[in-house]
Image (cartoon, rainbow, N blue to C red; front, side, top):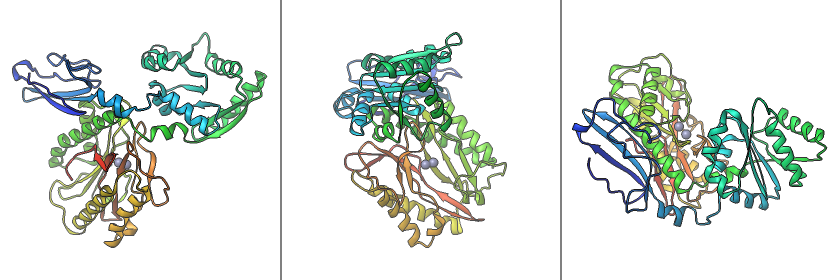
Length: 449
Ligand code: ZN
Ligand code: ZN
């Protein structure tokens, strides 16, 4: 085995002696359970004698070699720069609630719950007040909820209530009793994530329990915290982006055999899973030739021609975090108008990326890209906004659009994805995902363009 000398947050390549590799050996998607002989790699394990900790690994056998990528972060950095306040996410939420006169918040957005507690189940509610943090779920997640929230449970005194067939009301009873014992008389709810029917049910339940509670709609409180990624989140996103880069590199040669759009989408998805992705970040878009004029085309049974421009928009999920990237590929040679459009879109994207830094208005990024495309005479064919934040969700704040009034801040992760879509001809979109640094930006996606 070759030596591995990580010195900073990032990715290291590891190659295993061919004599030790056997067909089928590869690291599992969580980077933990691996076939011999890469069983020395496990997440959360520090490298001896360093402050570097492994956060993930993936690999596969190729021509008798096991090629593995080890993802790591420097935990010294994590403490000194990424979390300067040392406040937990729940405590930072409490601070924000105080600034917004929110005494108690019922969190129903599952991504917000995952961000605050680590719990990734598909059913949960969370109540946060100044002296309480309660998480409820059902018995399908009885073991998982304890495993995933162990860290938060100790630092934030998290209380967990799990309903079961014998105690089906335990979740709502726990919330009602906590509201009663904490003296809460005004409960904020996440207006963008709770249905009218659910709000009505809570009103009835509190009334039946002789509790006079007023409901206050709230928007974007936890999302404000999620805007700025810490080092541990960026490492996971970099990993997701790197898996997608590798998957595209592995998939591209199959264009030689003129697959259909659906077949190529499946190839990309298959490689992402094989390289360690937990899932696709969203439905992979593959749109060839005239289909490329539809920005969010669904892959079809149309075969991809050798000289077609193919818009491929896709991403991987790793540790719950998503990546998002678009490349416009061509197996043969782009020619005519689409070749010219490709150069314009690439130039527009560069104009936007060059402007990325803290303090710049999101609208100015959009305008910089749009101006290049308008000046080239294609303004009417760039019919969507320039970019968006990415994280636990593929579309998060901020929005990089003309009517955004947000400013970029260090730690945001955004896409820059201008495109030109000409009906009946085709389309070009080029998208990268970048983290805003103290003086500019760093791309997390790195496929050639
Ligand atoms: Zn995309
Ligand atoms: Zn995007």
